[in-house]
Amino acid sequence: MTANQQRIEQHIELLSRFTATPGAGVTRLTYSQEDLQARNYIKEKMVEYDLTVTEDGFGNIFGKLEGALPDAPSVIVGSHFDSVPNGGAYDGAAGVVVGLEVAALFKENNLKPAYPLEIIALVEEEGSRFGGGLMGSRGMMGLLTAEDFKTLADKDGVLAVDAMADISVNPANEKKRDPKTIKAFLELHIEQGPILEETNIQIGVVEAIVGLTQLEVTVQGQAGHAGTTPMDRRSDALVSAAHIIAALPGIASGEGQGTVITTGRLNVFPNGANVIPDKVVFSVDIRSGKEEHVLNAVRKVEELIVQQDGNGIRTSIEQQLYIEPKELDSSIRSLLKEVSDHLEIPYCSINSGAGHDAMVFSDYTACGMVFIPSKDGLSHCPEEWSDPGHLADGTTIIYEAVKRLTEAKTT
Image 1: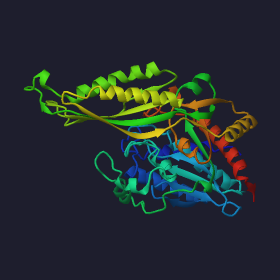
Image 2: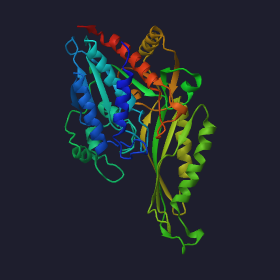
Image 3: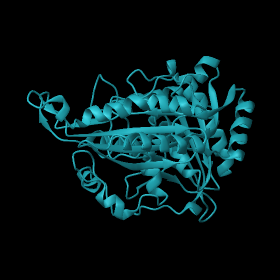
């Protein structure tokens, strides 16, 4: 049985309504009211598809179909349900919807798994509210400790634990997941790039995910009056930050090998039109398919930043995230390709230039990812769109793979 395209489209459309920016893309920040609305929808559908619903101490949502084997590890399917500000309807959400559809197909076909099936909806993959990214998966695997989580706050100083309480999610729930309870993790995601569309291939089986690091840079200067402070007496934090940011593309190009560097967030203080900025805080995102290039780029960026110290300027760097490049499980990749061949759905091998929760889980369990094309290669914007037919094909591939991995039988 193939995936129900109409049901998939409906899930995507309804989830896209849970946004803080109607008409201007999907803005669904972790532990917001929009998070709560999406959370309730996902949990409601999980119950409808006969799954037992729980939440962990980070607010990750699990829907479990028990298996015939006692205490057996689960095959997990899913993705994240948070978004970037003014993002699209498919990034993350498509993978959650695929999980829901797999559960629906198990119910409709009266399938009983030997190994449990779990559908997961993960929080804060994007890092848009609390920084760093991949928080739900990192937290599950013990890479974000309970103590660190207690002090985690957003840019407005709101503690994550307080934001959770506001939407009645309990931070006291169990946080860490024993890797022994996970047999495999499968994730469908939109490509977020142009390769599949340009080659007219509807499925990408992901071989590896790029390594990435995220730095938060603080440049401290001295505030002053814009009209009365001579140019040679200024310690302008924004001018120093601008010198750094303008030099980053050159570092990426010089390193080559697909290395990319991005500054996507910049906060200026006190942010007055007639005040010399005394502090600037900005992000630096560095990615490459080989770890040596990530490390080289980080070293060069750090050297560049330190060069701005002096004349009243002080810089500091905090590494918020570091994940090395990850090759996904070869047996899962082979299974996904075998299923695609059997279904006569064209596919190709592809690498991921974006980070995903699968790269965290891959250190602990067998992981596989399927990509579907993104229209015009666009993502993280309101124009993000993927063909529902491609999404249904990707879902069918995941479903068939999950049937084998869970050793499901018709009851």
